[in-house]
Structure formats: structure tokens, C-alpha cells
Length: 221
Image (cartoon, rainbow, N blue to C red; front, side, top):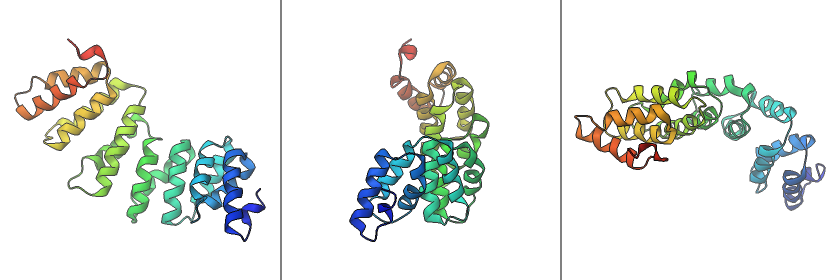
């Protein structure tokens, strides 16, 4: 199959990659990476296969490909890093947040959402609450939503997210309350309840909306 994945015939290459993606083991990593970084129809099948392959050597091969990769390749590799939660790539992903290429920055954000700890949540919040409506801000908000739901200490996460309510208005207020609702937990509920008594009609409306959508009966009282 790996030999056929390098066939001169496109249909043969694609068929071999699709089968390798479903049935291959760690020894197929190189062939699948080559396909995933290519332009052919089988690229998506290769990515799906790499996402499920077991073995530390698979992670190591993905990290090794990051060295010297161009922007397009990094976008694919960061997707795999996030899906597999490859901790060894954390530093590379963090550095990519400052890359001159927007494509690389946008690819790094969802990967970081799967890797960072609570202490590093600010890497996403700074971008999620930046001024303007740049694509990077939208991607940062999506990544922050994913990261917040991953945090094992929900109360500490809720407290950290609530810091962004200071001086916030409009869409930022709505976004924070939506985050708190998705995190839920005792602290998040306490914060939303307090703001439901706000003197600001806009803040009060958003807080009561989220209470009405709370994911469990804790908000019933």
C-alpha cells in the first residue's frame, strides 16, 4: 500500500492512501503526511487517518515536519497538533501566534485551544477581546470557547473569564456571559447571578438571558 501511495497514477495513489488511512499503523505516518500536505483528493482521508493513528512516533513525525514548513503546510500540521493534542508542539504553536503570515496565526489558534492550561488562557483572551473585527479575533473567540470548556477547574476558569467584564460593553458582554454559561459551575453561576442585578439594562438583559439558557437546573432558583 505504501508503495502504491507513490504510484504515478493519481487514482492508484488516492486509493492506496484511503486504505492506509483506515487500516495503517504508525509505519504509514510518512506516507499519510505526504498525502495530507498534498493537493489531491486523498488529502482529507490522510488527515483523518493521522488523527486516529496511535503511537508517540506519529506525534514526533508531525512535530518534525513543522521545522521548515511553509504557511500552507503549517495550517495542516497545526490542525493535526490540535486534534492529537501534541504537547511537544506547544512552544511552536505559541510562537506562531506572532507569525507575520495571517494563515499561520489563524491555524495556530484552534491548536492552542487544545493545548494550553488555565495560566495561559490570556494568550487567547487578549486576542478575543482586541479592538476591531479582524478574522483573527473571530478565530480567537472560537478557540477561547473550546479552551474554556476544556479547563478542569471550572470555577477558576469562570473567575478568569469574568475579568473581561470590567469596562466591557455590547458584544463583549454577550460573549463573556455565553462563555460563562458554557463553562457553568458554581462560580460561573454566581457571577452571572450578580450581574443579573446590574444597574445597566444591557448587562442585566444579557445575564438573565444566559440564566434562562443555563445547561442544568442550578439556575432554577
